[in-house]
Length: 115
Length: 117
Image (cartoon, rainbow over all chains, first blue to last red; front, side):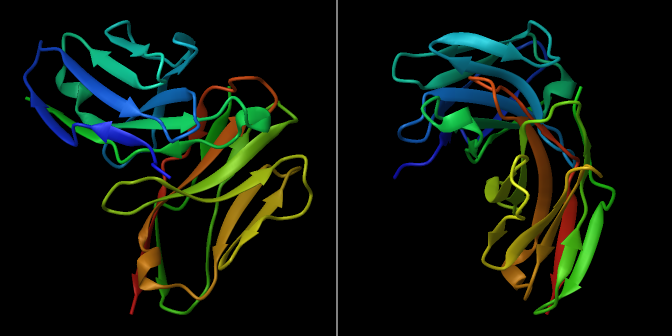
């Protein structure tokens, strides 16, 4: 059973650049959430995608955008990168078919460093 | 807004001993789920245990068990017979349970657990 996968594992960008991170959900899952985890802190919710639409959003600026494809995979795009965007970006998937969809499963993350 | 607080930034336990990690949360909801996740240095976030708020019985998964006190909004994790592989950052998380696409999980800032041989 394939778990949640993310690519790339590491990424180095410079301020002002744009970045795209990718996520494939766990087999059988159709809902993808993205989180930002700064060093030494807990993950912070960015947004969630279901049926190719953004369903819920956390307290992140419009520079953070996403997309979900018909195969349920998802992308996180960050424009005009700032030094403060350096973090571990985690993707989590869940299934709308689960009663109450209570459990999210996480991928290994993408470590983004902005110089 | 829901908040999750882990008041112990670091904990240490001797191998084979028992340790308890604390978590408190604040919510006005009555129906929700609570989770403990483990994040080793390799950074993969792994689900350890989950608790449904509507169940009074505390969840147990092998050496891991929780003490869920709904009225006190407390959700502690007990690790019995600690092993070296238990060393990791542990996160307590909250998620609303009754909405379709319940959305975000809210996490605490984590507790770093060290296991001494």
